[in-house]
Image (cartoon, rainbow, N blue to C red):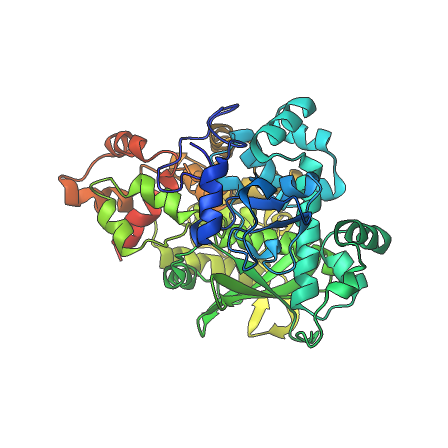
Length: 501
């Protein structure tokens, strides 16, 4: 399958597959370009040889002759080839589908780590070590599947975020350089001069939005339509921890903590196929990491067309997908927090688990100096839970000990929930933790590690949702039935749960 075949289900990710990655059919891409077909936005970028510019397939500019264009699977590949971003269609606002295009497992995991800042302070060798592969092999995979080196991918993300902040905010250029992950203002200016032939300040349109520090920085986060916003919001509303999260007025609010600093985010629908993220945080340099976490939390990189095409032919799932074609897989702001939630939720209702999470936060969470948007606390840090006996929680002693062990493991290894390992390796690591069985490990993999093929087959709700096909299946029967849903079993699970209402 090439990147162009969006109507066909993707093949399960395979290492070194010749059927994915760099193979782009020139004629098919050009037909999509002529049609300005929005289904292909983010799936490829067009390098125009006569201008040195690369564009999205929906660019309003006059379409060049076929002989004058080259197609690239990623913005990073186009920039590495020497093309600069178009100022009209703004590639930085395209849906980010790089991790969903059937690339290899290793490349998928590497992209997640790069998005979370793995190359901001580290190098490619360290990234390769985290992935369990050699540096040369990782570079070769990136060239094969994305057309660009890992460093180019990270650099392109920084440039495009900076360009988005130039267009969408009135932040000073020095602050934009910091907020987009550049190590210095000099490097920021040099990069823009090289790419655009002008200083970054000249790219700013006059009369843009004004930033008020008290209201935070707002950025648009694009997604590929459709998007089931009401369903995602309902999911977070049902699970909101008092003081930490709130859902009101069609928006989601929560407290966040990064590198010892506290802040608040607000996520709400924006015009077009995008969400608006507003960030109130004292360190501008944390903005890329915050954006990456929110994108994962709200599953903005998903390709619903590919997922629906694969699952929609199933007799049980087909009607559910027709009812909710834009369903997403809600994630978590923080992996440790999600793991705690999963253990708290073992064998009790969602409401009861949230009640316990609220008591845990009241007792051990850090209180904000003053409430912000009626939010009052940060979720407890691992080191705090690790040092307590959790006497405030009315739950079995074994489960309390499991929480304390989990907290100690997360305190010892801050990267415990950062991903990078494959699904099976991640599940094995999670199952090694006291009190974490198969269901809990699969659920953490779904929500915290963003594994699209995780599947908690022993979940009673999933079994009940399958009763429309006949007698309620057991865990083994459901697991066997779900084999046909790979590599999107987590999305199948989400549809089954949603069908229960």
